[in-house]
Length: 163
Image 1 (cartoon, one colour):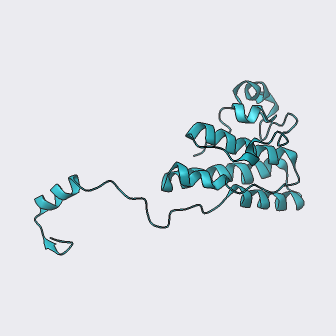
Image 2 (cartoon, rainbow, N blue to C red):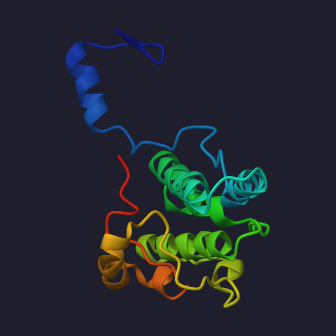
Image 3 (cartoon, rainbow, N blue to C red):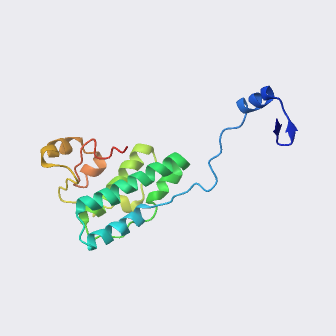
């Protein structure tokens, strides 16, 4: 086998593989979609007459998926950049609070510092249960993560589970 201009045996290749330096993050790894972009799309959905629950699924859960994908590809510091730019108001206090809650929750969970916009007390809903059927509201009040509960958003332990 030829490796970087050298002719090596299979054994020599295996030896090199075992002593190779740690993997370097892939070139071009970065944020592809941000919370701010998803908030803009959510605002457009609301303006077109979509429900808050549809905007929860598209805006908040899509942002969670974007964050998770970026986390896997580039690590915590790159993933935190999903929340660098402040989302503009969507036209819904519930969604605005949910974007802040998600940023705060993920920062706490993964050990990075949430942006100042995510900690603003004004980003608060008045007892919103996004996509939580009435039968599960007691569970949501009990299970909701701190970042959501503090902002008046109540979700079940399964609400942020993704496939």
